Length: 363
Image: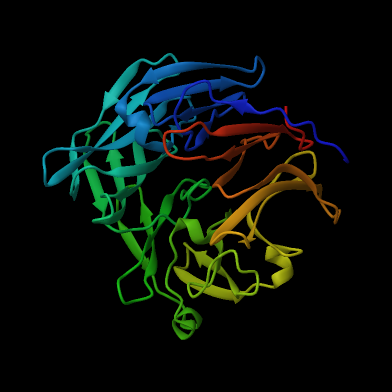
């Protein structure tokens, strides 16, 4: 494949598109904007429409879509000058709201900038919410909450950084989910939780203790997936920037059945292409690999990224999105026949979403 015809789907609403939630049949996806709109996009018709306008949409970076197509949103609402509460909203694709959660007190503070990821339990009776809050620089929170949609009971884990963001913390067999528990002045540990909220600690491995590598928050995760009962995460070192391709990289294999953590050194060839670090990757049904590649921006103090593709085993890359000093998201559909590439601009500005087919071409 030598040429890619790029046609962007720019959001017709002013507001930053933070994430997407694929419909279970891969026929389309939903996304949110900071203006509080939940929007649905249909792949067949290439049309989009507003499903719901609600404050929860403005804060949900990853809407949760259940197997039956129910959509869940979450936001943190200031209660008073000292407290904020978590509110869950569940609606269908027609915008009919069927559920609002009890107002669960989450954190102290006000004027939050926040983003959330919502995922459903397999039986659609519970919601797992990953919440990241920034109280105007005064406080930073990384919390998780488990909500029962029938009883509206909520269990909260404070400062449990999500182990996945854009994938799913839920094990493929649906038995439970993985949380991370970073601790101040310690390296932290992973936690396996079943749907009753019962926790099982996964002790830090001897190698990670020796390396003195703490659990890293989601922006530092270069790759993540499930291999049966094992969660596999690839991260850089906490000691240097993730865009520095000379730094060591580690593969964490977290066995949620045996409650064991293993740390392996990762060959540079597995995490870099040329002089660029692989930030995200996705494999499509057509044998195409997509990559978000990242490197140091020599002109500015920061990183820039681009999106490229290649047929599996082919060393030649074809660029899909030119280098930008913006956040880039890559997310494949459940049937692996499409992928979303989202380029973030600034909060409150338009983002651009690219939709690729299984051959990697933008449609």
